[in-house]
Image (cartoon, rainbow, N blue to C red):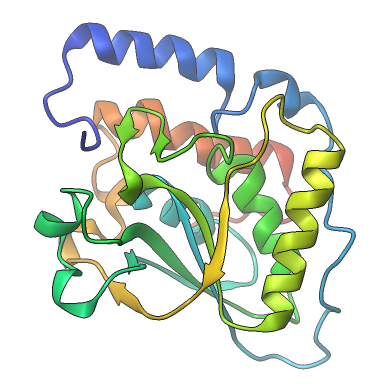
Length: 228
């Protein structure tokens, strides 16, 4: 099922109720009243400006992209596809769910301003619900799976340690199902998918599923939040 296409009014109403119960990322609302754990294992803050890349999959890329566009230290966030081959990195094919691709976001950030661990902290707290298997909110299928695509052994080590930390702390009532897998390639999505929240703010899907994520970011991590 694809993000809101053909959703009836009743489904939208139910999604609105669930959004209120479960908060911006699908996590139980009580989590918004606690300090989300910072990664115990992380890279040090860089001493000079540079660029690092994180590729993350957490359901529909519209909302995930919007969240990272509101974070200090993020240089760019691009919606796209990871996990499959170049010839199938097209929306009409990915949406079928049989290409191996996941809707993903490439986050380019300055590690002198924000660490990789902090990028993951946002991912696991407000960008999506990491306990949903092959789905996210109203979107179903492996193309909406939760995944961290690591590009170095250091990224792999930090991501694995953070998942273990969150599970041990029982931050979520269910076990985290996020895949931690090597990044083979990232393919930018079609232009009409870029900056989707900014251009479609009145969309019921965006209002129900994605605007609360940005609001959750601002509430939980005001020190990392910035406007466009």
